Amino acid sequence: MGEIWVVRHAQSLGNHAGLFIGRTDSPLSEKGIAQADAVGFEIARRAVRVTRIVSSGSRRAVQTASAIAEALGAGELLEQDDRVREMDYGDWEGRAFADVGDPIAVAKLFSNPVFAPPGGESVELLCERTRQAIEDYSQGTEPGAVSVVVTHLGPAKASAMWALNCDESCFPRIRIDNASITRIYSSSAGSYMISTNETQHLFQGNE
Image (cartoon, rainbow, N blue to C red):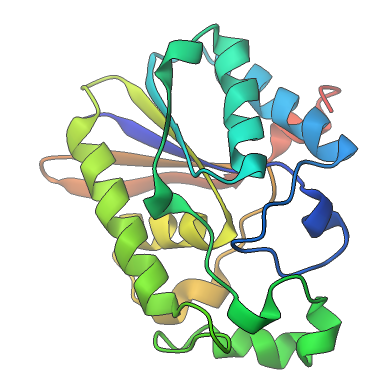
């Protein structure tokens, strides 16, 4: 099997404002557009053989995936998969973190797999659909090739948890920044983490 490179979308306007943005469609900020170009440049610079570029249907993910495809000259590889969309934050959608409660206390809530924001989606359901998608990509990636998956904070964390074979209690303990790359190797013998939250390309004059 090959590698799966999980890319969190670049900074959106909602991220910049410090809001819970799950199903809400928020485009990239000016900084995010530069970040998307930087991560695309980085993937192209590494000269890996990318055979698939998947994104959620959210505009911020599609914009990031499109920048990667453009850097690779591979627009024909773009596809969408709703399984890697962001968590549905329900009544928290569009609200500022500080308005919901103490940030540390709120973060701890997400260590409970059955926790869901009011009217939203649980961590358990998010991880289940993400793992199904990542398992499918791992089976469909050719040896020596790379599948790039452009997704969101929650699914990127779930992907890392899948590679590490850890349970949902790890969810709030994994850091995934905007426009970061998390690399997973998958084979018939299992999967393992190559790297997580790579962001050096954002500080090399490409942003």
